Amino acid sequence: MLHSRHKINSHKVENDSTLLPTSTPFPSYNQNAHPQLIDNGASFPQNNAQPLHMNFPQQEDERYQHRVLPDNQPHPNSFHNNDSSTDLVKFLAKSQLVSSGLTKFDDLPEHYKAWRETLINTIESLSLSASEEMVLLIKWLGKESGEHAIRIRSVSIRQPNVGLRMIWERLNKKYGAPEVIERALFCKLESFPKIHNRESQKLQELADLLTELDVAKREGYVPGLAYLDTSRGVQPIVEKLPLYLKDKWLSHGCKYKRDHHVAFPPFSYFKEFICREAEERNDPSFNYPDLFTNSYRKEKSSQVK
Image: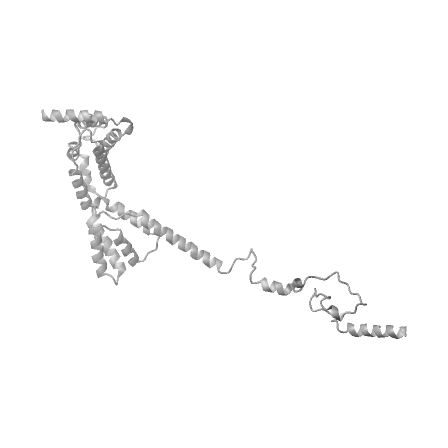
């Protein structure tokens, strides 16, 4: 009887074990997931049991694969984005340079060459088309010069290259011709007022004007300024000086003639003399208004007498 019961139990275990899979489809399958299929008399190892949420490592990797990228592999579009960003930064920097480094032309011939060189040097690296350059040129021209450019652009709208060349030719002829610059500089010199003793600021303005004349004369694009190297050319400027500077220039000029054996000092020497005197008179360390005022009163009283 005992033998038959043992045989029945053994047969039951064998039948129940056929319900268990022979090979698990996943490496970490929990063998205790179905305890009702296992007989209490049978023992199975349970040391390798793992939580349910870690049973599918391959599936978890596939789930997060699209969200995790290696650090050493940049996005394929990052190179294109970096190039576009660099171009945008360069364009904005150049636009800022154009807007901050240029000034409008004041329609004065003596300032035309400096304004033109500044404009050309600023926009030459922007690679602008002829139409874009005409728009930028008209923007920075003055009232009178801008009207010339607008009229030329209106008749050459279909040929921007021709229109741009015509605008520069008109500007160079009207404001950059040597005769025009010479006449403008001499008119500016003739209209300069007479300087008195206490007008040190006026003396500095005269020194700046003489510096402008000397630079134009040395560069050679205004040959008529060679007239300033003669006594007749300097005499109208000397008449605008205070009395003490007239006497001082007489002493310096005569000394220069004796030392260098020339007929008359060059204009550059006269310019240096006026600039040095203007610097001394405007030195804040030795600026005494009372002294200049008293000398000015003495000069006026002597003129009245």
